Image (cartoon, rainbow, N blue to C red; front, side, top):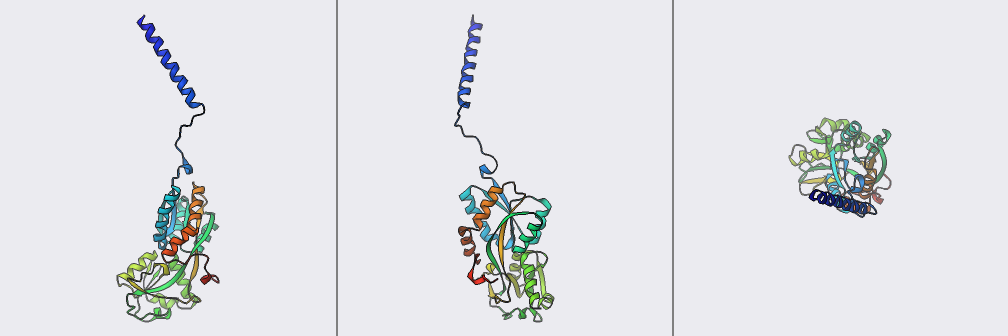
Length: 272
């Protein structure tokens, strides 16, 4: 008799469990974990080394706003493009000049792009400008130690060579080069450590507390638009576009302006 009672009780418990389960599955409001882009996730962005400060700040604000974290790979623009071509992974690319976006687009790597800010070349020297460098021609003077970016690597190197070639100065300046660096940030180290008398850098990296700046006339200088592009093989295309739109928005540009960049479009450079 006891066995029959135990069996009957088990059947009742099983039936009740099935009933509850059936009611829960029908029209359930229970939250289920989100996957993919719905969950926010993260983005991998390849970014020119000279853009680190504003882009780091943008990543934090974007994560707060959208719940999407951003991981950067910083480096020289050409180096980053080679990496993109090799691994064909990631979500966005923001090099130091538009020419690299154009090259990536020709290879089929860019889905969309948006102009954001300008890169402008300037000469910097140590505090007090001890060698009295005032013009591009002064970089050709005997004994002047010059630091530039590697012309086949970072955007700043390619831009410096292009600018100097335009004025027929490259060969003479190259003779005075003590370094051709892989990133623009390395040039700042050479100035701060007094290992170079002058360097050609992006104007936005100028620090008035540790160096002097010599402006290059607009008609002789190098002024280019920096775009950001989404990568065609992104596994998170919707989020990648959100990030591109945020970087190129007024809110994103305000962060660049705070870090010394001229934002696009600008009347100052409208003819460039």
